[in-house]
Length: 117
Image 1: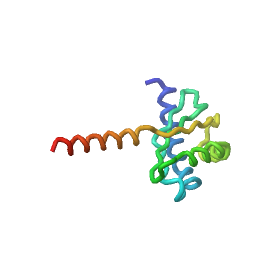
Image 2: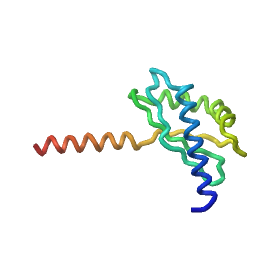
Image 3: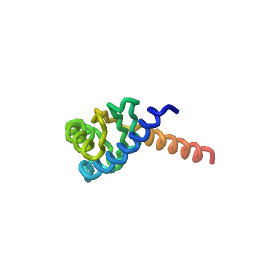
Image 4: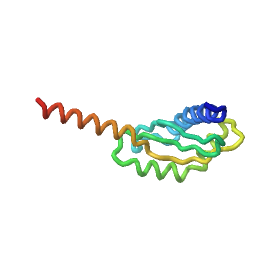
């Protein structure tokens, strides 16, 4: 692995940790459900961060995603004060399809087991 790729992974892990704490402190409430940062992907130049989230406890994570988009400037500023980097990365939020996909597979397996009995 190249040095820049390793650095990007280390910085992404640091951003993930800080972003997780920030989102729980600032954005998690009863109406938004339980927010988890599942992963952060960053290119080698560290100028952007794709933050993937899982939201549990609510059927519609849309309002939470809207709030994150509206407060993106505040989140970037707070992240910059916690993580000292040459460039403050531009943030892109997305829902992680993994947990929902895993839940669907689990349900299909259970249905298959019930059907085979």
